[in-house]
Image 1 (cartoon, rainbow, N blue to C red):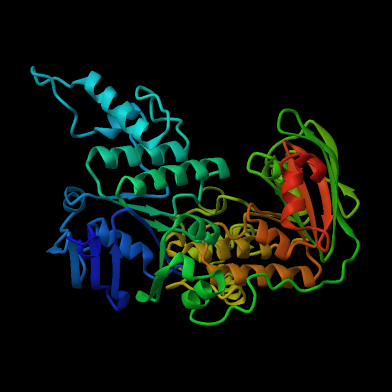
Image 2 (cartoon, rainbow, N blue to C red; image 1 turned 90 degrees about the vertical axis):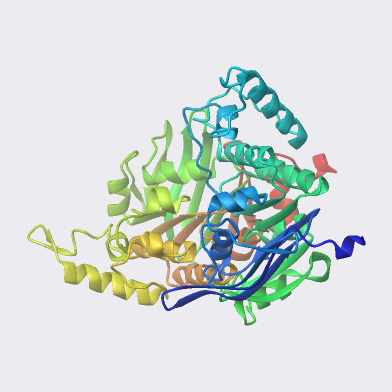
Amino acid sequence: MDPEEVPPPLALVDVTKSFGSVRALRGLSLELRSGEIHAMVGENGAGKSTLVKTIAGVHRPDGGRVLVDGRPTEFAAPVDAQRAGVAVIYQEPTLFPDLSVAENIFVGRQPRTRLRTIDRGRMRRDTEEVFTRLGVHMDPDRPARGLSIADQQLVEIAKALTRKARVLVMDEPTAALSGVEAERLFTVARTLRDSGAALLFISHRFDEVFSLCDRITVVRDGAFVSCDPTADLDVDTVVRRMVGRDVSSLYPKEDAERGETVLEVDGLTRHGVFADVSFEVRAGEIVALAGLVGAGRSEVIRAVFGVDRYDAGTVRVQGRPLPPGRPKAAMDAGVALVPEDRRQQGLVMESSIERNATATRRGPLSRLGLLRRSAERESAREWGERLSLKSGGLAEPVSTLSGGNQQKVVLAKWLSTEPRVLFVDEPTRGIDVGTKAEVHRLLSTLAGQGLAIVMVSSELPEVLGMADRVLVMHEGRVTAELDRDEADEESVMYAATGQRPSEAA
């Protein structure tokens, strides 16, 4: 049979799914072929998560067909998808922390000896064999507790392969990974593709999509938009299809008049983490801290804000010393910090949107020590409107929001304190392209209103597109300070790797 005539291991045809009055999937079709990495991109709320859960057997479609090897199939439960050779690798795997790597891979289906006891020797050998196939090394006897997110994902991939999975879905797999960890995952993905597996790769990062994937499917509002070979597309075309309109600029940075120096950091040192870090930020200025993961960027701003202590150096806000290790003092001085991990450090996920959005303003919203609910609700409503927050209601748990809207709640929480200095750590990580442009526009507007902004970002286009000045860090030290007109990808990467251009030539 001609290879083109071989039915794909998994296909969805005109699949629909509704939750009450909300139509999550509107006749969406997708075809996953053997020996191919297939990207699916779309804004938050486009239906990607619902589609993944349909493929995984968590949701049953209301209409349409699921085809396995060309035959109509029903996944009534996740176990049905697993039996059909489908595995989903989630952004944050859920392993049993007190079991070993091998035990996690074979949990519930351990090989047995003739005496019906668990054959631990075989389990260990099979684990080593699958890791060898993937081209990685991991001790089968190591406890899962303490494994990095990247290693946990590899355990899940190994588990899928021991189940003879032919279709692997990777849902935002690199969101919590360093650059080195992501590259290792890409090597594994290419190994799986070359061995004949079909991979579905979901990511907001276009550089990953274009470098890794063979085809790109675009979805919008739960419906299929297009599917084309990656080689036939460019970023602008994909963005237009995702948002249904032209995005004039992902980085709508406007020139702002720079005022007086608001923040001064001099000789800041934390032994073993960063050393002799000095910089200043003026009103109306966006200063980016760039560098590779592990360079110490986040650690510096956490120390300035008082979350972590430092061993030497001084911090001044509007000329006044800021005491170390006291976040409350930083807040009183007009400093705000939007953290890197919004779910763990920025929000209380089980709490309401309005409670999260006003968490930094309990005093002003209280009377005689009692929080006024009406004032809380009004403050949250006002900031929700200013930031174009999309929600089902402010009383809903913040966990019900998309990643981009969760980020808006974190921004509302801190902007409502009317800060003079705003630290934003990875402001657009894990959010869709349309919301990225909104966040960038907001940062530009805030700078135009005189706010001093320090932005940590691992996305070089974001750094170059939004910063008035770029401070590059390498191994805990500032290795370059570049004005907007002299910063480019080459100069930033030289400094981020501790090299000078002449050394790298």
